[in-house]
Amino acid sequence: MKYAFGVDVGGTSVKMGLVSEEGELLDKWEIPTRVEDAGKNVLPDIAISIKEKILEKGISAADVCGTGIGLPGPVDDEGVIRKAVNLHWDRVFNVAEELSGLLDGMKVRAGNDANVAALGEYWRGAGKDFGDMVMVTLGTGVGGGIIHHGKIYAGVTGAGGEIGHLCINPEETIKCNCQNSGCLEQYASATGIVRLLKEELAASDEDSEMRHTDISAKNMWEAVKHGDALSIRVAEKFGYYLGLGLSIIAGVVNPEVFVLGGGVSMSGDVILPFIEKNFTEHAFHACRDAKILRATLGNDAGVMGAAKLVID
Amino acid sequence: MKYAFGVDVGGTSVKMGLVSEEGELLDKWEIPTRVEDAGKNVLPDIAISIKEKILEKGISAADVCGTGIGLPGPVDDEGVIRKAVNLHWDRVFNVAEELSGLLDGMKVRAGNDANVAALGEYWRGAGKDFGDMVMVTLGTGVGGGIIHHGKIYAGVTGAGGEIGHLCINPEETIKCNCQNSGCLEQYASATGIVRLLKEELAASDEDSEMRHTDISAKNMWEAVKHGDALSIRVAEKFGYYLGLGLSIIAGVVNPEVFVLGGGVSMSGDVILPFIEKNFTEHAFHACRDAKILRATLGNDAGVMGAAKLVID
Image (cartoon, rainbow over all chains, first blue to last red; front, side, top):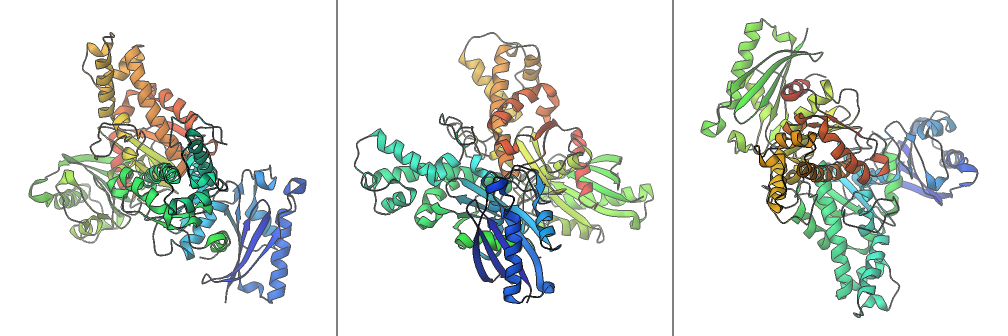
């Protein structure tokens, strides 16, 4: 059997996995992300952990295809990262080459974490029976990744599929974290949903389940399931902007399927009709048949996609 | 020397070219598009014309790489066309295979005409010094094509890069030809500019050069050069929607360059600042460095890109 290591680097912990060539996640573990000293220990810590795992499992070097790594920042096709604020990295360098050096020349490929998670869902998750795919991650922010002919579409600066900052509402006056206004992320992220909820709650005295619980995206979707009118109005705003956004993305890259991941997608199929209705209304007819599905790999998508980077 | 034939099929005429492997357009000619009888003569007429040219030039079969063909309709990666209203074709079939059969098994590749023109501009035109490119054709309508790693990005139904129908203004009440509202084409095409001009002229009695000449996109850009206030306001609307649209496209596919073609682009560099200002304002920082250039091949882009389909 041939093996690959998949590494998904976050600001707090690094998720790691040993994956078979056929796509079975044989083992997974985590190590802390040591961001002190400009994050200089992050890659060495990963290399040590991989070497330990090889010893522990008694794997022969000849049976390792390589290591794939997903990183929180834009990574181009060559493996060059420009910036990774969460890792305290402030230099432009080739992550793939550097990690390969620490692993005695092992084959290493690097990608942006959202793109790599998209590849994971395409390979072994919700996208596995489809052709071109766009993954949209609805978490604290909104990220995404495009898979074209089975490969990540990174774009020239590694920002391909970074759809959270598409300007979807030019009339918006509130600023996004990116300093623009009207970004998809301002409506379709968990943070965006909380903002919309607070606006709706402040606008009237209408009773709502949301006045008696923590204001969170998760609780809102529960309230939607119970028929809470105020929550349904917020869900409709969410669905309007996300459906419109997906229709625009479909008009650019014409995928066969959209896969929705991240925390918001965990609330279940209740989210889908709100999105689909608006997608269908705004999409150009030739792009309108794209399916919209929820991700199935959860937190393993990043590790699986990273491993796939080195499995042909 | 090796040769390829490039064929650009329109509703009235078929443009054809003999192109060297190095990208020199050695000869070009046209034949009429015979759309009668459900367009059954279109491909046979093309095959006959290519065979005649081979005889005329005394080219040996071994020196022909093949024939590429651009068509007015969605064409997928395999060469299957779904619909070509302008050619009166109403069947789904593999154009590449059928034309190859008529050319005694010659290698044939087919693509959508806007995508193929994009490939031409990428190969020998404004995009030749760049990586990933998006071409935007501003003509009677708005079309486009995405070039990724030197290849056309067709999408699953061949509608990739069909950006004329991105919904860029959900507030619009006037319907587009596609039956949606707020499409980029309603503002950024020559037709859209005329519509905006008529609206502006009807809204007041303000004097304008446009009250003393034919109302056309071409004349409007001339008036803009002369400082005509009303025309400048329309140019600003055009630039607002097109700049916003390009910023969204940049956020999805993160190209290195946009190339603007079609009739509107022929009005010169006067159009660029109106677009650039709005592009920069709305684009996500990681995608903001994309250049915006005008196409340089004019009507030859389709023939050149078609030839490139069969030149590796």
